[in-house]
Length: 399
Ligand code: FDA
Image 1 (spheres, helix red, strand yellow):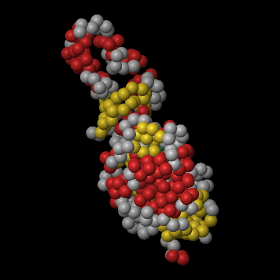
Image 2 (cartoon, rainbow, N blue to C red):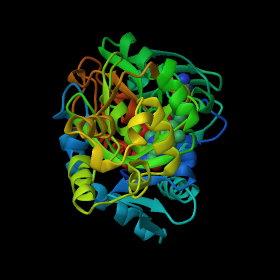
Image 3 (tube, rainbow, N blue to C red):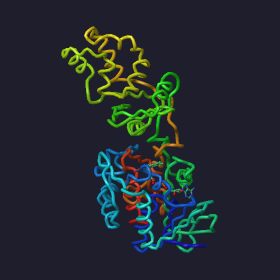
Image 4 (cartoon, rainbow, N blue to C red):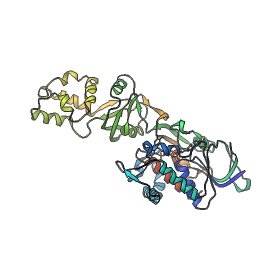
């Protein structure tokens, strides 16, 4: 039997941060992961450059059935704490946009910092370790016993840091949810989130004809809106605008897209008329939108005939028709690309059963849940890693 003060299952962002923090307090710590490598999602994040936090982090950037739960940890370990950690290691980083911080070089630099911190804290990391069962025990003052492919382990504190369900090929499993159920915690419904949308029928044909086109839009659903860029794909819509709004979208909900978020087509058309612009409207729109988009969009909306008419001859209702088509395109996605490509899982372990200070399960002393396995989902922009660092650090102070 291998015994530790604390065993962490899952060597991802939250688990590594928790191990480093607990180990530095003098606790004996082991991290067990079934994958062949640690921190795989860190390595693939941010297009290989890891958007590791954001200059502007607040509870409003997170979704949860209990919106207050994340406040305590986010304030006790904030973005500046993580920035100061990476600065100690002289990590070269930059702000891309909207406060999002990325490594200048590679995401591996972030993983190396966490591994160096775990090393300083003498945490043992075991990969390729299958957890076969977890039971409570009172043997030798321990609380949990684990049967694994690497033998039996026992510990006082057991931390579940197994993340969500996205990208199963990278080792994601529902293990954390199963353990939560086994020890009497409730679960909130889980869905693929920060994920591209899929379409069918005419909308799909449109997206396919525009695949590769990217443009700034405002996307709205369920009273949430994001002004970001949108990318047409062979399956539907992706890009930051689609991913952000997917956090708030549920099957059957309408998505509204404004393709000209920074101009009013009614005003612009009025100005063109006053200036006596002779060019055809489609050509004038080329000042605002990609030509390929205008061509396909006009056809899709049945505006081809209208677009042949000089603007001077347009009636008011025709201008309104164009404005509506460009500013208020409403569509119901068929679904999303699912966990295969989602960045995160929305929902998870019900936070009402977990302490927001220590992350200990209220019904199972010595059992802790941190990171994405919990029902706390960040927006796109470094918020999910900040949650992993904050929850991992705060839990590491207690285990
Ligand atoms: P994480 O998923 O990191 O780690 C869980 C660990 O548990 C894994 O090592 C896994 O192998 C292990 N595990 C799972 N089941 C197990 C089992 N049964 N037994 C043993 N071990 C098990 N966020 C962000 O803020 N900025 C970004 O740039 C990105 N980019 C990004 C890109 C892509 C493609 C994805 C998929 C995700 C992102 N994210 C992101 C989200 C971010 O990666 C995610 O929220 C965090 O990694 C969550 O950290 P956790 O430690 O909770 O889980």
